[in-house]
Length: 189
Image 1 (cartoon, helix red, strand yellow):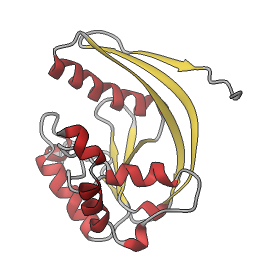
Image 2 (image 1 turned 180 degrees about the vertical axis):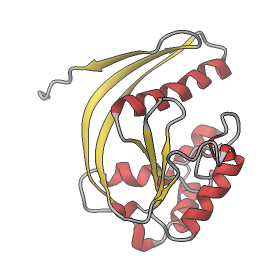
Image 3 (image 1 turned 90 degrees about the horizontal axis):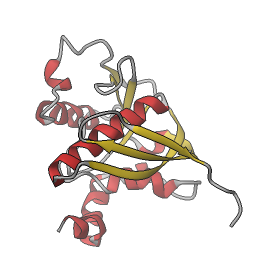
Image 4 (image 1 turned 60 degrees about the horizontal axis):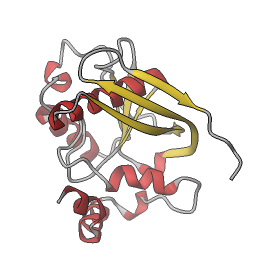
C-alpha cells in the first residue's frame, strides 16, 4: 500500500491540488526534484510538515544532512528488525530565497515540543500553521548534528539553482558509528 501511495496518480493529484498552481516549478533544471519533495510526502509526516503535503528539507552543511538522513535510516533498520540499513544518496545544493523564514535556532529550551525526539505532533501542527500564513519556511537547529542548522521550505518557487553534487553510500548500524562513503561518479556514459 505504501508503494502504491508513492506512485498513485490520484494521491499525487490530491497533493498537487493542495499546492497553489502559482507555486509549481517546471521548465528549470531539477524541477522534478523540487516538486517530488512536495508531492511524495512521508506517510507519517515530517518534523514540520504533515503527510498531506511535503516540503523541501535541507541541512546547511552536508554533515548535518547526513546525520539527519542516517537517523531516519537507523529508525528504519530498527523497525524492520535489521542490524543495519544501507543506501546510496545523491546530494543537491540549492538556493532558498525569501526573508520571511521563521527562525527557531536557539529556541529548543523555549519550545521543547517543536524539538521532541519521539513525536512530530506539535511540530507538524506548528509547521502547517507557518505554511498557512504564506511564509517561506522555518530555520531550526538540527537534533542529529550538534551545531547544525536545518531548513524546511514551503514555497517551491523560492527553491532555485538546484544542482546535483555528490553521491554517498551510507551504512547505518542500529548501534555504533555511521559509515559515509563519498562515491566517485564517472562523467562518462
